[in-house]
Length: 133
Image (cartoon, rainbow, N blue to C red; front, side, top):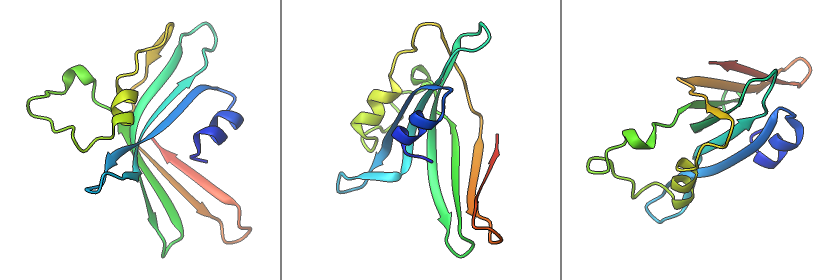
């Protein structure tokens, strides 16, 4: 569900999907539980396409068998003060993705806050997906 190649293959409304780990550990390795996600939806009904640049935090409650994702929009780069913001812990690929220019005929969407919950229904073992925006 969260694999970018899988998402672009099965979500027919997406024209682009990119995911990059957001932070590095002290050893310089990527932390996959925090990511920067870029998606672009196709244009519909004469409107411009819409894209989203969001930070995602993934966590699980193994005792309940639930998986959660918290997400919100990334601050506009021109609003980040380089004098007071430490970007040394942010991965290079995430910084590159965050500075991605807006494609032609595309409007930037802004997610204030979102939460996803994924779990299996005990009665039939089907995946249940809930989202709050």
